[in-house]
Image (cartoon, rainbow, N blue to C red; front, side, top):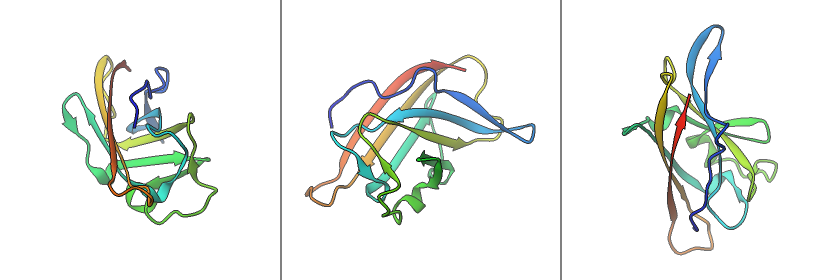
Length: 130
């Protein structure tokens, strides 16, 4: 998986529902040379300012549908593909979201294409501001 800028610099924000900040989200591109079905995603490890977010709090949105990482393993419909060059929304449930100011993100994308004898992992990092 080739390294290239994957984060939308304008895509980082806190998420507010019913007046409560429930977490944060960002937009990112896949670090792979083609589109994928969600079922081959094994991990989207999000680390903010050195703190790894719990796996069960990470969700991915493609084609206006949101799935937990565990649910991704069962999504085989071609309606829910993460296409090359397109941004997917990543929501991280975190009470209070992120504080205003500068932050550092590390995102490990881990996928397992069936035709590859090994899984593919790529870590992407960026600084951003809320």
